[in-house]
Image (cartoon, rainbow over all chains, first blue to last red):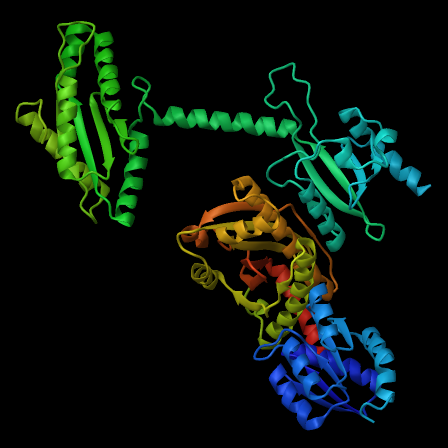
Length: 128
Length: 301
Length: 205
């Protein structure tokens, strides 16, 4: 499985990766991006199965990256992992096509929840 | 058991406790509140606080309750103003200052899932009264230490304060500043000839007359026995000289209780030169005054 | 008390992320309470000593305007003080959000500044403490209005060797409300915090 982890903070990316590995074991390819722009080009190049996306980033923020990735691939599976938990922000990303919005910091419980939710979508063969 | 225990404690404590929801509906009203407001628990429980009492700023109260529930932590309702939550009159037989209770009010989460908060009201009137009296005392002391006992204008202390301030203002905003230093001619002679009572009358009357022509921004102070200073922000040398002469004439024309007495005064004027020290500014006026005296008195230099 | 409380790049990175989370949480609270939507910006975080703090403040604040200094004591493992610096126009804008009239009195403005400080610093510091497995409590906030020029003197770091400055720009749709949140931590707390950060670093970085 291919995963794209997007966050300007090294710590945050590493937290996602760590919990991801715990959940999936080690048979997964992980790509990292530190802002929305890098994320978009990596997505186009690598076509990951799932994306973990932060919102507050320089250059291109998560709101924009979300829209652009979804525009490029309407079946993109994007989980927003962010410190921005305002109601407005959550409803915005959900209506822009995110599968879930998870409050930082990520942990094993939350990661389990994420995979429970996305399992069906992954299986349903959006990316085979 | 627990609820009974909690209620007993809340009813024995010497401050107000009420439990309300986000809409100000009262779930619990303790004994202190009953005693202070005259409203029984059974009268108000189930009712909305803003319907039982006239509250000021209901939206602010509701917003603070919302904050408490959202943050799950205590909020201080009135950190500065001691504005009461509920207005409670105090009996005022003796000479106390406040007629209404000054309150310290805190709002804490009680049961966030049920949306309930606990409001604590503490009577702080005595503290406020003590503070008030203290402030009054300080103000009085301040007045005593900066005013001249006889003429009631500022004394030298205060003058030093003011001159430094005016110089700073003059520097910062580049405005003119002038100083008039004057003294009453032969006051000692008047005291020796007619007595101190007359001497004092002269001082008081001179001050009264000069004061009535001062502008709001001017500072008038008694420097010493018969010496006075006036600080004139915004006035240049020419204006200051004209004013000094005007005062000279006014003083010359004052009528006293003893018709034989006529008083003159000598004036020294200086205008602030940017960059000079306070001492220099003052000393130039002083030297000018000395010059006026040497040249025969009753004049302006 | 020096090298013991120096933060290296890794420490700063971790702290930045922790503050990001804490700040996100507090902004959400404010947005909910004010019924407005705030744009969250990446908070800038700096660690300053006395000299550096004074210089920073002089840069940030309008020299001839008034600033509201809202101070709240923090008790617990993460002990110290939080100071929220707001200029007068931000407080006046905030007052409008709090349904006050245009003619709000000084006392009203102080209350408004205090309320925002209470929310911002309690939720930010509270969340920070939570992430390092500690709890904190707060003393009642106090407000003073100071002139921009003298501010550096008012914030003399007497008992602290480091100050954590978090540059917060809360932007509401229409009114811009800018404030700087400054955390002073007692040396003992900094040592403790550093250890907590080390733990996180070893786990994740």
